Image 1 (cartoon, rainbow, N blue to C red):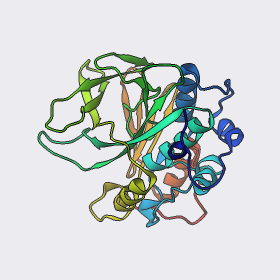
Image 2 (image 1 turned 135 degrees about the horizontal axis):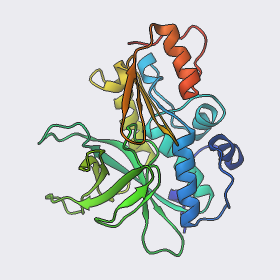
Image 3 (image 1 turned 90 degrees about the vertical axis):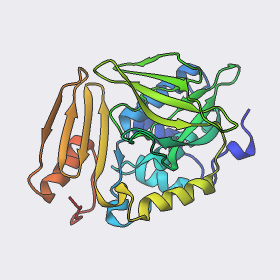
Image 4 (image 1 turned 90 degrees about the horizontal axis):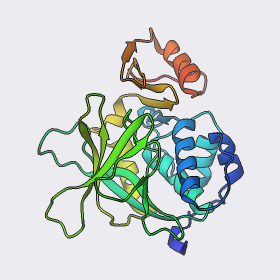
Length: 281
């Protein structure tokens, strides 16, 4: 059942335009298959990018602005934008959504405790006892392509990727879940850890501002763009373009200058910025 606190604030959500943007034409009912297909279509259809923060702009999380940017323009966004948009779409389809926040573990040194800065959500399918973790905003080649049931140690094969959720011992009163991705070498790698404590829109406004403006935030100084396709994963980090094939093969190249970077964004990622835009290396 969708409650008032489940509903997205602000402007009305244009489900038709969203479906066209992600290339989705499924049945509009809150079923597990619809959840899976919408999630995958979004993950493949809209790129991850932090091009606003690196240009000194704090991305708006207002639904009207998100639709203008991610749905009606040739742009993408980072986790707060992607997952706020997905949450609005899933609510419009009749799913119950609880917003969550995670500590990113990918790339952290042993013992590091990072703040909760990553947005994700718990999606309830009417009539099903087990909810799902949904997340289309984790900018990495091991990100979820499909929602994963909230079941410990059950492996999800969201081809070509594999994921699982595990319980992690800690001292808090709520169970700590960790999402892991299987690497090409066959090991399980932590992506992030979270509890089921609900977060609200004002919480993300604060976190979004911090990530976009804090001088220590990596998203403020370096370009990070990601795009997943059915035949691989593309990433632009600074001016290094990396392609990861489904078999794990990695190739790299360096765009020659800022103009070539803008061409790469348009041709390889489907992102078009205003003419004359300058990006940092």
